[in-house]
Length: 162
Image (cartoon, rainbow, N blue to C red):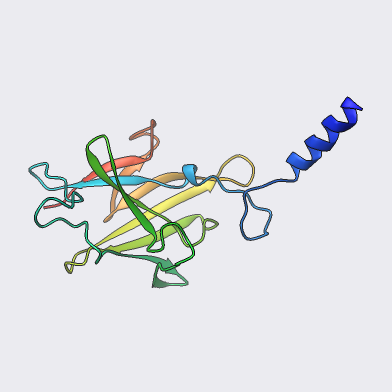
C-alpha cells in the first residue's frame, strides 16, 4: 500500500508545472529577470521618490519589441500591470522589468521615463535545464552591463545617468 501511495504521489507531482498558458512549458522567472539601480554621476539614487527630479514617477512606461514594433506593456490581470516593479532593497531603489512573453531568446525593451528620456535594453537568453531559459547578457543603451563574467553572483547592476 505504501508503495502504491508513493507512486501515485510521484506521478501527480511529475505532471505538475508552473505554466499558465497550458503549453506545458515551465519557466523560472528568476533565471531570466534582472534588476538595476539608476544613479547620477554624484551617486544620487534616481529611483528614490523622495529625491527631487527622480525618475520614479507614474509616468514610466515599459515597451517590448514584438514583431518589429514596441508595444506598451499593460495587463491589469498581473501583479505588475505596467510591466515593472520598483522596490527598496538594502537602501537602494531597484527597477525590475518583466516580459510579455518568456519564450523568445531575445527581448528588446524600451523604458520611457516620462521626462522625454528613453533607455533601450536588450536581454539575450539561452536554454537552461529542461524548458527553462537563462539570461546570458543584458545590454543597456548599447553597452554590455551584465553577463555571468561581469557579475556571476546575480543579475543586477547600476546604471549611471548624466
